[in-house]
Length: 449
Ligand SMILES: O=C(O)C1=C[C@@H](OP(=O)(O)O)[C@@H](O)[C@H](O)C1
Ligand SMILES: C=C(OP(=O)(O)O)C(=O)O
Image (tube, rainbow, N blue to C red; front, side, top):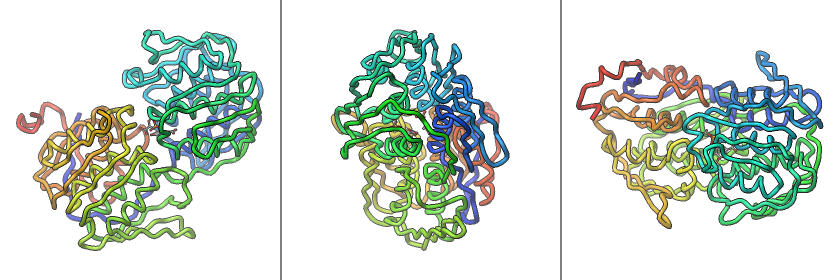
């Protein structure tokens, strides 16, 4: 099925931002590894947090979903009692952290995932776990998922990881390190990208009572064997999900209000707020009502803008969509990590937006695609079929880009919003965005070409 989405003349109203996926996933992990009961209020319910819950249940946690909070009975000091096969579906974070945790228990475990996950880079993590004493093998022999962890425990010591492939490798070792028999040191080589996600991990561990320290440049970490302590969490808003609503608000003059917004997030994608301000859009937080108001004056988004995304990788596709309407140019650099995400996100956005008539050029550094420059226009004809490349964030970004085109577009991959933003279509429907699921064979030949 494809989703036909009609463009709109205006965008305004009140919309609810989903709770944070990274915060919810980290809280589930801490609750699982802690002794006693953890409650996670305002948690995000979506496929990828469900995958984390199921993986944690397989580790031995008891997780109950109440109306407005999760209750987790953790496994505490007992070593993880991991089921024989753990399914991480498409979630990089689940696969990487659970693979590391599986190293800290005594019997064999297979960790696997879907076709997308099985294509993602895992070799540096497996290598680092081996340096710490894990006996881990890739079943397909390419150091990718699925893996079997033979369960010879995590001894400790020093491991090395690259900083420019995925911060989730560092997060994974940090979560497992307190369970090792001795202290763990992580040395990161090369530049460290996605630091905001490592900071979120460090904050979760510190609040849980783990003895962890990090150097200022985030290239050196030390973790002592220590116990996770149960606690209550309240999850804040997700700025990657918010970015789609904020970008839509920036495409049309007027006022938009977002709810479930608290304004003190550690997520690097909070950068979408200062970026909008740079583009001439006003953003005001009201802590008393937990809302954010966007006032977009006519004539915003004019000029030449440059953004570095090395600390906010997940808004790269959103920025490409936004850039399609910047009267001047938007130059985005530092996005090289996104080629290791669910899709190669810069290539995906450049390819699909080019098909829609957008002037977007991929920027390469050291031979790898690192960013793009997009020279926007007032509008585009639309009437095209755009692929999500199997990636929820590509679908949501292209959907936003289509809102100001002249005629309806069709998109693949709309079902994938359930991974991170299950209410995406309902929220956009509040602004009058009309969507219709259509059979693929009904697509006119010229649109499908
Ligand atoms: O730890 C996390 O929750 C995440 C870390 C980041 O991964 P990368 O460092 O691979 O970009 C981010 O892009 C991903 O969406 C979530
Ligand atoms: C965090 C994401 O994915 P992953 O955990 O698979 O990297 C995402 O795309 O939102």
